[in-house]
Each structure stands twice: as structure tokens, then as C-alpha cells.
Image (cartoon, rainbow, N blue to C red; front, side):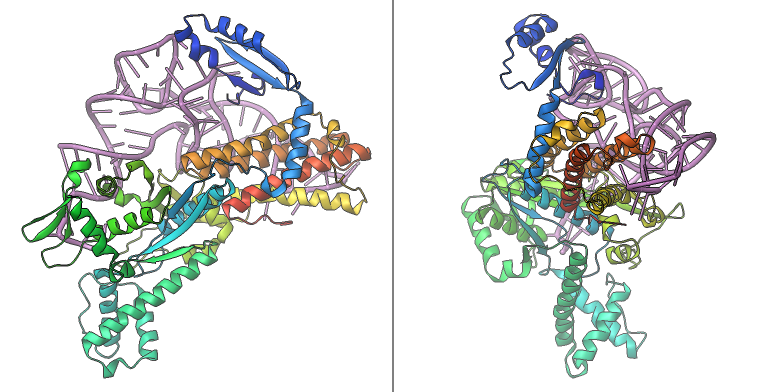
Length: 527
RNA sequence: GCGCCUGUAGCUCAGUUGGAUAGAGCGCCGGGCUUCGAACCCGUAGGCCGCAGGUUCGAGUCCUGCCAGGCGCGCCA
């Protein structure tokens, strides 16, 4: 069943007869006629049904059914679109997971917007969802952060003090050095002690900064999962023991390897290096097996596209432990490029020169940033024109939707000022909604539950921004009918008709509000 | 060299399990406010859906090959 793009093809259409043609060895149109002849419609749902084209069946739904749908939508209120598709599902959604060694950049922001919105939609559809931020705080990078901070501190007195070769060069490192040296007397410590302290405090401060930035971006995590604790709690060792007992691990040239090639990987992978330290992959395996042990029915990871080569080995490791590869879904975020004045704003992480999420949000606002991050499929690269996102006008798609919501609120205010009340029970009032544009609005709203289920299935929340744009457009179009013909206005002389249309307006407002809330975008009463 | 992603209007991109005449925003051009918000609406122009084969009643969508761009192929994280 699909919604045809040509209005002449009715409200719904199916290609079932054509799909059945070969197996039934009959002409599709003939099959279509048989199906139509067998249709049972005791409830009077269908106003018109016809066989069309090469073998489509087109259905037109009775206006009264659309009107009834509006009534049920109004009654459902915030629960509109809720379904039981996620019943019994327990999803672990891991995203951002930025190293606590520097500020969040735009790619993290894109992942945050995607993950958070996906979580909201899944929850709305009845899934149990836990969102999680994995903190890479066990490896060399945090140590390097400490060394970088220490070096910046030393350079305050001796500008020639060497800086670590691959150290973090961003300005924030100097800020950290100042903060830490203010709070602690580094001079009384050995270098080793000082670096240690800089690492641990640097990690802590960066993490707090990251948490705050995300919170301001309206993203909150249920769990902050520390890699360090994974190691210190013994979970890493336990995992390796299990994999060893299952026969997936072997030693070679002084290193410990896992046989991922047995499960489709290109080559086996080292999990413990010759020097005795563990690879990132080792803790990541332990981390994912721990996700499994915690009883999740599904794991979703959002990674930067530069990690895509990592997927086969991760899935191989899971399979080695008997976990089906589809249990884990990895969504890849392609690059975010920033443009200003028609030119690309070049970014270089190594040199510490890049636009942070915080800066972009401060400049253009949370609503606009979240919205534009979800206007594209996560799998395609995203160009963000900062001038366009910053524009407080119609060039900015987020305002188009927010404006529709504000406009609906404004109409309701107007009605209230004129003393027109909205019926508590829609009852027969909705029967007065018979304009094509009114039915169109209800039809568009009726797509919403389907849309949410689609998003749960495909993990593509960007469809929501498109949908809201469509709903807003349908509403704006409807509103503008009234600028030509007073009898098409919502608030007008015929009070009964006004009431009916106020119900419709309330419905539109509800769905816009709900959709924007799922996007983490505000729905203003006025702008 | 191998692998993954992308290629659709001037630009940025949608396009559902393969369906009827491929869409939106921006930009261009032209219209619409004496009463519900013009941050809006209506209309015009603009397309070998990267190229070439194949499967199918039917392909932007599936398969194969090629071209172009991005990313990845470490006992780095």
C-alpha cells in the first residue's frame, strides 16, 4: 500500500495485482478486478475504489473517516503516533563518544543530533532505549593530553620547553594548564606526578565541558561508560579469558591475536601488543560484549565515517562469541563541511584550528543547528552554509516549520479573543471539514505514525524534518486560502464552521509540536 | 591495488518493499497583504537521475563493468 503522488490516483494505492501476476499467471487487471469484487467494507471506509493503469487498485477514503481520524488524533494528543512496534525491544544507542582530549567539533554535533533524535523517536514508538557515551580514557591519548598540558605550563616560564610531537595544540590546552596550575602547585611535584595529575584533571575538565556542551545542545546521556573502568574492573581480562576458552585467541610473535578472519574480516587483529599493552580494539570488544551481557536486544553505534573499516572486525568479534552480526548496527556519519561567504572554512584538528559545536551553537542557536544536521541522510556529506543557518528569515528551513506552529497558535489566540470556544468533544463538529485542503491536512497528519515506524526501522530521522516541512507547507497553503476568500478562514462568521476548523488547527499544532519535540527543536507560540 | 560511502535541476539535497507524469529549498523571472501573522502563498523556466550493459510488464531504486569525488586499509587512538 502506498500513497500515490498523483491526486487523481486516490488516497491510497496498491500494486498487489502486478506483484501477483506472475505467480497467478493472470493478467494484473483481471486480478485487480477479482480483488475489488471480493472487498469487504462493512464500515464504509472506502468511498471509491477503481482499477487503474497497468493493474493498480486506487482507493479513496470516505471524508467521514478522515474526520473521525482527526477526532482520534486530538484525543491521542501527545501519544499520537505511539505504537507497540518497539514492544519488548531494549536498545543500546551509543553515540558521540568523543575522546575527552578536546572540544566537540561539528561531526560530533551531527552525531549527537542524529542519536538523540533517534532515541526520542524510538522511545515514542515503545522501544526501551538507553543512550550511552563511551569515554576513551584508558589509552595513550589521555596521557598525551596530560603531557600537552604539562608542556604548556612549562612554556609559561620557558618558551623553549619542548611540546610533544603529536600533542594537542588547541588553545584550550593552555587554558587547562592555567586552570590546573592555579588549583595545584605543580612545582612541588616530579614531572611524572605532574603529568599524571594533568592527565587526570584534564580528562575530568574536558569531560565536564563536553557534558555541558551536549546538555546545552539538549542532549543528555543515560550512561557515561568509562573505558578505564572497563579495564580496572577486570571486565577486559574476563572477556579475553572467555574468548581464549572459546578458541578465538592465539599468540604470535609476542603479541596476542584474535581470529577475526574466521568471521569475514580481512586479517586477524592484534589485541595485546608486544609491549604488553592492549589495543583499542581489545577494550572495544570487551565493551560490546558487555553491552550484550547487559541484556540489550539491539545495539546501535553512531561512528564517524572514517571508522567504517572498523565494522567488519567488530562484527567478527561479536560473531566469535556467538552474537549475530545484525545485533549491532553501525550508522556512519559523513563529514560536515562548513561554508561562509561561499567559501569553505578549512579545519585542521592537528593544528587545533577548527570550529567547535559550541561556537556554532552560540552563533546560530540550538534549533537551527539541530534541524540542519537532520536535513540530510547521515550517509551523505553535509555542507553547512553558516550564513544560511544564521539567517533569521525564510532561507532557514527551521523557521518555516516553527512559523507554521506559531501561526496555528496565533489563530487559536485570535479565536479565544473573539470568544469562540473549541468543543471539548469533537463529536459532529468535524463533519463540517470537507474542503479538499482540509482533508489534505488530515491525510498528511495521518502519515505521521507511519513515518515514525519507518524511522525506527531505517534509523533515518532526517525524514522527520522533511515531513514537518511538508505538513507546514500544507498548513500555510490552507491558511492562505483565507486571504482571498473570507469564507475559507478558520475564524469567521459561521461560528460552527470556525469551531470545526479550530479543531483542525489544534490538530496541526499538536503534530507540529510533537514532531519538533522529537527533533529536540522548540515550538514557539509566537515569533 | 583492495574495501566502504557518494554522484538526481545553476547550488544544497529528498525520493518508502522496484510502480503511474522524478520532487523540495535556495537562486532566476512574474504575481498576491483594507480583517485569522507576507518568517507566508501562487505561477514560469530549469533534468541523457555520472556513463554503458543486464534483470523486469515496469529501474533514480536491483545486478555487472567503467568514470569521478570522499574516506579507510597500523602491534595509532
